[in-house]
Image (cartoon, rainbow, N blue to C red; front, side, top):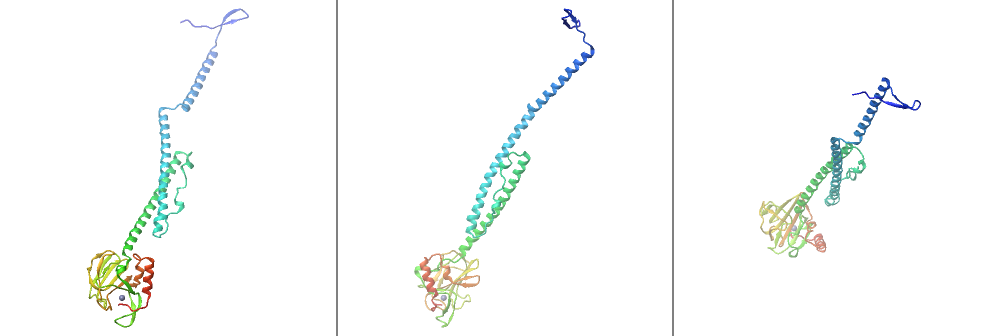
Length: 322
Ligand SMILES: [Zn+2]
């Protein structure tokens, strides 16, 4: 192949003259081309790295976006859980604990984690993860506290219920079939003929009138010969929680020793056995070993007016029927 030559038109000589390129000029041209190529290459590579993602980068970006979305949703769900828990805590404090007259357990500062998702929205993934972690820990703590509280409330409900059924709460004879003739306190004894503490109340009623257990319990004495002089035929019921009731001068017992009885269950019949001046029931309530006024335990089946009347009758310092 023949070597190419360049020619230039010379206006002075009006002829084309051959252009002679020196080696130096040739080298200069080559190095300029190479330098330009390199610069262009760098620029393209730089642009490519910054504005065009590799498939791996695209995938990672998608993952990051999805992770952020999940994190936000997780925090929204946690907010809902916190709100539900807050409601449970409020009910616990203001309803359940109020019923049982016990102190509230939740403090207002513990109600909220405090920071919200919005407050750390623009933060990096590390901060967001830490925030979410702390939030879960706070939620767990509150859940634990709430479950302990519910255990306490459950225990209160259970024991109060047992306590309520163990407490004498009715009259031992239907109110329209008896009359309170003697109350609690010092009374003149009709047979012994002197004044002494009357440890119960006397309810005058016809022989054979049914007598009822005034609270749930277990019969511990039934019949004669229990070492109680003057009481005649008796029934004693142990109700637990320190409560006992005693029924004396019965004509006959129906309950047996060891028998479990319910409030309102018939346990025997009115009579006048032992030291008694007439047919009646001598009824006692014993709390923690001490005799207490049974009239205060007649609250379940009396109207306020009837209760007033009985209190008035019980306060008369009269002669008891024994
Ligand atoms: Zn009596």
